[in-house]
Image (cartoon, rainbow, N blue to C red; front, side, top):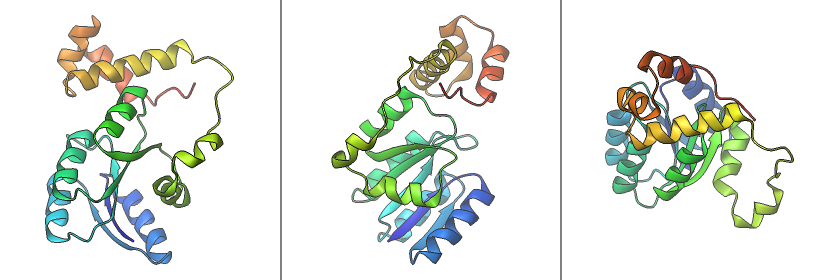
Length: 176
C-alpha cells in the first residue's frame, strides 16, 4: 500500500512512517495542506491517507475535501486528539472511511482502513450515559465546526467570552 500521512506533529509522522515501512508499505508525509496537495498531484498512486483533523491553522475537513477531489479513489482516515460526534459525522459525509482518536497504534490505524460494516458487532456499546462535560465538549465542537473554525463567531454563538472558549479548546477532550 502507498500511504500519505498529513500531520503537523513531526515525531508522530516519523514514528508512524517507520512502522508502516517496516510492514512493507510506501509512505510519504506532509505537515500541512499545501504539502499534501503537492504530493497528491505528483503521486497519483497514493491509496490511503492518514489525515489529522486539527493542523496548525487548517482544518483536516477542508483538506479532506481537496484530497478527495485530487485522489477520488484514495481511502482517507481521520485521526484526531480532539474527537467529537459532529466532526466524525462530517468527516464520514465528506468521504473518510473511518475516524480514530489519538493515541492510536499503527496496527489500529491499518485495521481502521480494513474494518467494514461486517465488523460492526465488534464495536463496544457504552453502558453508562455520556457525561455532561463530554456533551459540552461535543456541543462546542459542533458549533465550532458550524462556524468553520472561527473562534470569535463560535464564542458569540455560545454566549461566552472568546478567551474562555479558547481555554476550553486547549484542554484535552473528556473521554466519557
